[in-house]
Length: 330
Image (tube, rainbow, N blue to C red; front, side, top):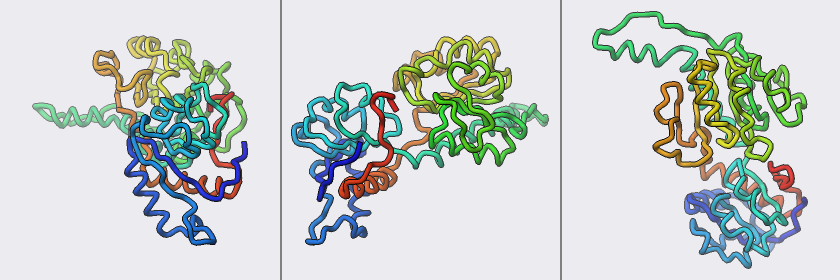
């Protein structure tokens, strides 16, 4: 879908970080002549900045920069909406809504650098057995012992979901001497990935991996895709990292596989329901590390950069970057 030509934008920001995003936008606009018209008037103005959906004039808003969960509460009432720039990489709340006669663009190109840190912090910690050395140091009688280690060099990293974020992991994995294989819907070749599997060959994918990172989007086809068969295809030394969507994981199957020793550890950043229920068994399982959906958080400055690039394209009537396909769900 191509954006309609618009001489200027009246922007509504609807986000838990609305004020911070607005401040970042104003700071960047102060030194950007692209958003000043030939008549000296601004081509982008802030109409509303809020974290409350009820404060948005749903009947008149045309361009919105919004958190998907907040926008989904009013999206069906936004009859004049032309374009919504999301502040998230995943957009299930909007993709699952009834309304789809507008352009929805995602936040991309900024998460790779943060996801690299998250994924390899845990993979390296496991490979070098950091926890064991810490326990030895803290013991009442310190223990001098060369605890078991399993270097990443020579191992295979499986990446389920090879979009821009997944592809950002490839050069780091290669720098550690790892081979990369992928799992995607299409199975098309991706530069740097030795082999790319599809969901119908997911068990073969699991069997060749030493460690797996899930970065798949939340779509009907990914629901519970990581099931008993997948987890039991992994190796006893495998680490599974879920930084994609919680809905892709069959929770019971993962717990059963960990209890049986089918894999060594799971690092979970995303969950079917968030925040994770304090009574959920994931919290206290000895082979699970839980983080609070923090693997690759967007920063207001990054959100502003992505939006401004698309805003200029919108004003000039050009196709917007990172458009979602409502039919595909990503």
